[in-house]
Image (cartoon, rainbow, N blue to C red; front, side, top):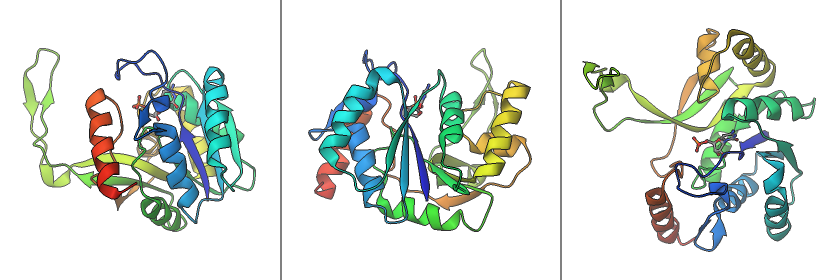
Length: 227
Ligand code: C5P
């Protein structure tokens, strides 16, 4: 399975002036933890890291240190995650029929979850890892007034990995560009194009490291795992 890792973000919400994926948890960078999970997932055969060239010296040093036995390519990132994935899709080897996309910031992903998504995407056009929502969610207008309370039974929190048929995902991204859609994950493009996306049960610990608190939680989880 081909794996694209969007890793071209900034550290804005982290309060950092550099790519948050280069911050360390338990003496390893966030991107290194993500790459270690990808390296340990037996189904993954190729990895594309989508990132800003200014970060490439750091990424190359991390790769040299990890000594991955799978082919890894660095792909130039865009100014949004959507653009970054678009670039990643153009850089995929032509043999790629399906692809997994996994955010570099979800460094606690397990090889097991990557493997189950890689197996499941062979049977459907699109899928995402997701977990049932625990909180009651409110839809709120711009004045801070609640508009509705969706039925929690139907709400899932989207994670990555997300898996797709490559041909369909390229078409959906092209449609997104021509329609000016702005989305925060790739499944949303499939949904807008009317293509089915299914849920694979994700992992509660598969959090996206976004804020300094998330770094502390990631540290706690990795310590408990004995990693
Ligand atoms: O900012 P956020 O954590 O939601 O971004 C999700 C993922 O998308 C991160 O791994 C980040 O590095 C990546 N990203 C990207 N290109 C951008 C913005 C974010 O690859 N322009």
